[in-house]
Amino acid sequence: TLFPYTTLFRSYDTQILPIILYCSEIWGVHEWRMLESFHVKFCKYVLGVGVNSTNAAVLSECGRHNLVCFTILRCVKYWCKLLCMNDNRYPKQCYIMLTKLDNSGRETWVSHIRKIICLYGFSYAWEFQNIINIDMFVKQFSQRIIDCNSQSILSELNDHSNLDFYSSVKESFKTESYLSTIRNKDLRRFLTLLRIGELNIMKNNGRKNNVPRELRLCPFCKDKLEDELKN
Image 1 (cartoon, rainbow, N blue to C red):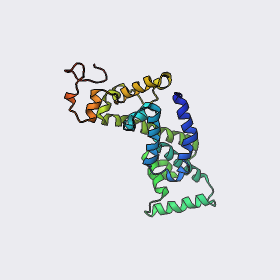
Image 2: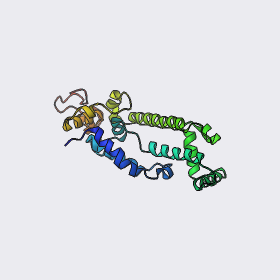
Image 3: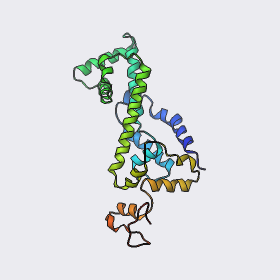
Image 4: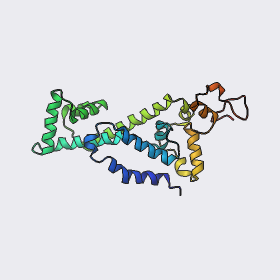
């Protein structure tokens, strides 16, 4: 049975993601490749493509961001929560201690939070250590992370020769509508493979087998290059 695309990712976001991100307010300042790999593998499973498919294309097709966006956001939310705590509470005392260690040159959790906040253009918030409207700040910070990650994934598409066709048809970072409208599993998978440069044609097979581009000829025409639009 082909489950709707939205159902699969809703189940993932509500049942699996909270487990993966458990306590990420602390360890989320680092990027964990193992978790990112698990997330991408699930996206590839939903699309029905091979494990060697380009990660950037898979995430872009699904409209899914890297998990680091959510771990960083959780860390920043927790930082905001610490700022509002009374100084007599243990978490706030730990934060004050880590801040002093950071000021003395020691790398701590606070050091990573400072770098993250400044990296995304909110250094003023770190300097003042006081946020008047936390909800507004978190909303702006979240949008900045999402925008930066979307741009990063889209720019990565240009680094792969097999995605020249995909780059020309991918207009923006969003979930492609055909994933929800096409209910035939084989047809949907065929269209995905065509778009992300994994279809079984000479252009893609030749690349995998190190065949020069000029020799990736159509098996029927014999004298023309085979790609997604021709032959």
